[in-house]
Image (cartoon, rainbow, N blue to C red):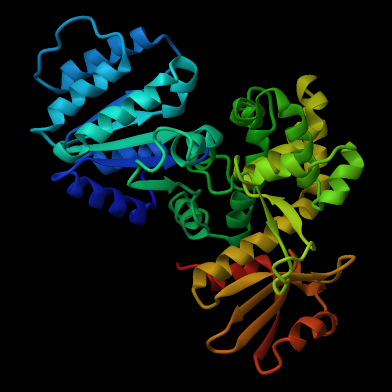
Length: 441
């Protein structure tokens, strides 16, 4: 698949490369696996000299042997002696960068925690002493969010405060997903929504589906839920390393949230645990969930719900992990039956997020959210507010918008609209077909 999107990220990386001509620059690229971090770094460096080093899980001395060979291929410099420590590799490259500007990309940088954690303090010392006199454009890439957060954003760690930029790479926007699908002959809004709901805009997943002609939804499900599908173990592969020995509890919480148990009280009543610490880590350290409140809630309000930020993981926990016994016995027909039965209900919550993102991308509103009152009364799917023009949009969202009763919606909106009496009110019924009005052709 060709390189899509990432214009703002490429512009920022180009700016940092230009600045490296006078002093060293350090950039951190993080984000979950499959989001395209490595591809972005390589794309940014393709028109100038760069060296790419991958930190695989092997002895430091063996890594250094591998890196020395790469250095010899890219630079005509003598490498004297047997280099067994990464600090010496880094010193050598710093010396090269005194006279020659280049980009050094170090991928899966967090793996040094298991290889030799002293590397981080060693690099800090070398960088602090040599940054000002080098022309090194240094890019660190990492996929384990908790570890990358610890390395660069924990004040107790040696590399804290050293990065000139920390860039958290997000999945493709809805507009970019549309561009990818359009290039593969799919322009309809239903397919756009299904691709968004199932892949969350992860470039690697879109590429897999496109390469295997697994679009639209029926073909997506045929490819994803079958023997040997790369998607069946994807959730485990992504998160086991993140969670470690507590993965069972974290997986259970994520399964419940994916099934619609989005309040802390619901989670605790089912699992019979105090979930506060787990939820806090899932939100902060792992960046896997987020919380949302009614759009006009006061700062201290406890009226809140949780959701899984990653659409694919939401799908995986709801339909694959929840039916792991069927996966292990190869009963994929059973899982497909569950998907056919429950997809509409599950995707209804994703559809709300779909329109929230589209409205946000329009740039017309400064506040966008949902609304509900205690006991989940008077729920409203979308409230979008422009405080400058004094406009408020109140919308209900359904796959089949003919089922929406605008008179009932207006009644439900009575309390929220009381806070915006001098605002122009626009009450809308939104269905998937309305996304076409918000997508740039």
